[in-house]
Each structure stands twice: as C-alpha cells, then as structure tokens.
Image (cartoon, rainbow, N blue to C red; front, side, top):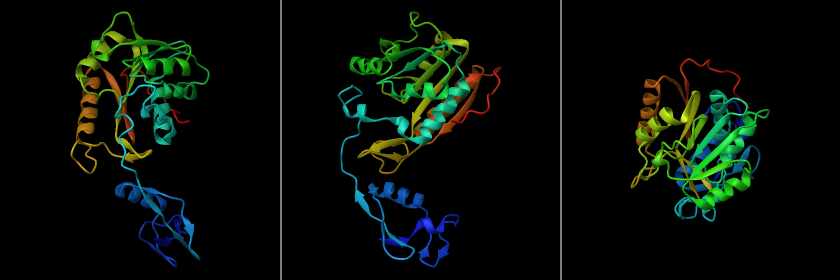
Length: 276
C-alpha cells in the first residue's frame, strides 16, 4: 500500500493531514504488522512525500521454546538483550538492586546465561561471585562457556531452599515463575527466607510477549485466545508485588515485552541515575 511518508510528518500526531495524505508514524505500521501476523519490510519510495509499505506474512512455526530450553533447541538462538527495552530496564533493575563489589549473585533458570551479560553493563567496575541454576545440563554447559567463572548447579528450583547454595546479594528469576510446576508463593518464600542476605534484592521477570517467526509479538498469550490477554501475567505480578511488600521490600514494576519486578529492602535508599 502507498502511504504518506512518516518521516515527513515527524512531530505530527497520527491522523493529522499532510499534503501527501494522512500522517501515521512508523510505530503505527509496526503495530499493524504485529496484529496481522506479518513482517514489516523495508519501504520503497513511491513519489514525492510517499512510500510503499510492504508486509510479508509470518511463517507458521513452533515457538522457540516448544522443544525445551536445551543448548540444541531453537531457544538457544534467542538473545533477549537485543530487545532495547528489556536491556535498559534490566540494567536499571540491576542498578536498583545494587549488589556490592564481590557480592554473590544467583540466577534461577539461567539457561545459556545471556542475560548475565547485563551485569557487566550495569556495573563495569565490579565483579561478582555468580551462580546459575538450571535443570538442563546442556544449557549449563553453554552458560559455563559464556561465563567461565560462574558456578553452575543442576537442580530443580522447586527443591529450594537448598542450604548448600547459601545466601545471595541478588537473585534473578527471569521468565521462570510462570513455568509449569512452580508455585510462586512457595519459591518466593524460600528465596527471601533462606537465600537472600539482609540487604539483598530480587529481580523477577514475567514474559509479556512471544516470538513469532523470529519477531517479538507484544502481549502475554493465553491458550485458545487469538489476541493477547494480560490477566494472568498481571495477576502474578500483582501477587509478587504484594507478597514482597508484606515482607518489607520496596517494589518497582517496569518493562514492556518482559515485565520486571524489582524488590529491595524497605530501609535501603532508592538509588537514582540508573540509566545506561
């Protein structure tokens, strides 16, 4: 379809009229492509003030985690830090939790450990004693290859607490708490009672998207619903927030494609200057 060039209307609101037609920013067209299950391809010039928008239907393929999270599966191709919103909000969450130099960090459901790359971005002058927990041995091998100094533990998070792990200054649980077999209330209780230091913080991640043909599609999905339904994700986020506040934490909720719940002790000073 041929449309008014969005670049020529920067600063206008969607729907305002320009000499070339109705202005709609590029974000409108990317959202439309997502709704239609299509890729937005590189546009072509179509005359003065006009461009031709091209869409290509997304392929019908299984979700990348359909075969599990092992190193040989499609999930190993996914790098969530390539989502700029996730990267920026994760760095902010890490800086808000603020583990000290040499502090102990626990990543639950660590998989290949890609998200731990954000620690170096958040704290370029600090090093940490990092531990990763996962059920998949092949994922842990990949995590150790990516982070050679990390200690890995092949275990099921539903068996926590484990006294052998000890206590940590920061616990990460990204895209984990809604997994089958995990009870959020039980796991959170085990973490704050047995695996957090008195000044320790938590960063919890709740997926609010899925991957379709290599592309992030906004909104949590519910079985048998064509469009996103955020009710279950919102309920879990609200439940975590309330539980942590009752245990004396300040809680912050941020993010877009993955909603992050960050908890720090209520007596801690809320840090500023968190941005990359």
